Length: 149
Image 1 (cartoon, rainbow, N blue to C red):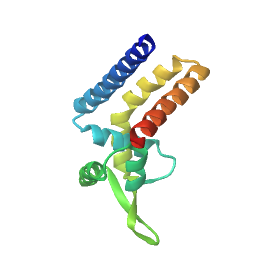
Image 2 (image 1 turned 60 degrees about the vertical axis):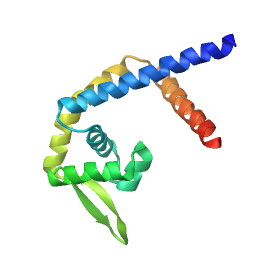
Image 3 (image 1 turned 90 degrees about the vertical axis):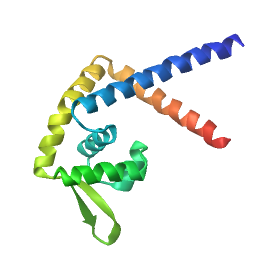
């Protein structure tokens, strides 16, 4: 019993940290007058090496299609992104910043990106690698357990 209580303490501590991070990102988005999902769309599209489709964005960032669709419509109406049809595929479109949109996204994201960089600069390369690997492993193991039932 003692061992399982110890693990429960870890789970609570990690979940509280996750929730605190969620709240920090939420507050950051609210201070900029955007929704959480809009912040993450900007973040994901800005960070992507190649243009993303809506499906890739949903799958990679674990948002529902409806949530992403709503955020994209708003960003498109504001002239920040445009949805570009993919040749030979009538359903999929790539999410691309407009010239003005990329500047707008950078204005919104730069303080956040700078803050994240400072955080990870405060850890060694090895600590960052281990932290990332353990975080992914934690997610994968919990997903595996929860979907097995």
